[in-house]
Image: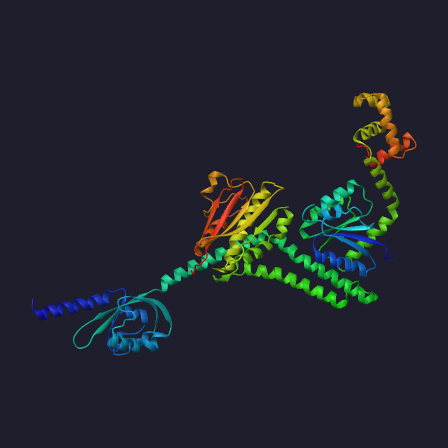
Length: 375
Length: 205
């Protein structure tokens, strides 16, 4: 085999490799002009090789890389500082029709006489992203559904919370009208103060609705810094009626001076709502008249522990290992997703949700959250 | 109807108490209010009133429990329950126990005042009888359990000797109990005494 023959062979092999590759392969020169554009690249970007040979590769990039690519190249030529060479990274590509798609780009350098070349190998991530997005959306829907289910169970209490201020408003309004008609002297203040009370009560009703709207809202995770004590207080307000009706004692022991935690407020509420509702259900199912639920916040080292403890019948030993399993339930009408969802949420916050058996009986769930977690 | 009519409100919601008092006032009715059944029961000298508005759901002793206590004491005034939407079965059992009426929150225009006035005028026409009943019950309550045993057996028509045998005490002791009962119940004759106990505790058929 002659040397010439060998060169010809490897050139043919290279062409075959380029054509057979599932990944898009693009070769550019030091000035950024496209020298090779394989078949997969044609399919991925929608250009024919013949149309883009000699064009600047930034054609395939949306901003900001579109505007910066020439500078990357000259910077690399001058200083050897590489943005992407040898690392690979996820970037956006731009197709001929102007649409963009997620892609994974790895770049290698071909050092040769007559000018270096760069070879880019590109994987289309659209499908991977689509699947991930679908999973994420399904998870969100599940979380949302769980909140709706629980709210459905709390309807009587919520109706009561809204009915109270409405009743007061109606009574104030009737009283005000009677006073005006009869020109009676109001006992304290005047019509103006009656109007103020009506305003106060409407705002009270609006607050209830506001609290609910948050929980009913569907949407993506939005973490921000929140006061954990306040989140717990707001959540417990949802149970005022339920607690009253069942004659259960509900005590909250907040923690003094705790830095705000980086959490999704609704998701933390969701865990608490699930835990408190479970406790109430257990107590009422057992027909207990001396029900007690205790919520405590503690800080140990770098974690915050929020525990919900009740004096209900507790979890039978044979069920403890299955508590967090999906579709495992002991409630007559339960679906068995509450705790498994709660555990997932805890994990997404870098924390955990655990069951333990208090010495005095009953049951305890402890949610731990790291003081510092940016997830 | 004069301003001398008094309504008592027992409700744990401050806004409800205050708005109801104002509405009653604007309709010419005086009122007092308690934040819970327990606070009401702890009041040794509650004002005399003509009607009670009672929240059916309250922390601690709830409305129905308070009503049962009041019914046992045979308080004469009518009780109107304040209920929520899901409370209809509770409200019905309250009526069966002898409550005058119930109101569902939020009230219709004029509904509250209408029912309160109806309750008060009903009370006016039956008050004398009800007050006598309450007084009679208080007198019965002042008897010792043994005295009440004697009284009940008397009402069944047993002679002293029969009562003595039934209770395992001497006829002489029965006589002493009987004298105390006549005295405590302010009965001037045995028939009067029997009438009282059959009014308070109608015999089951």
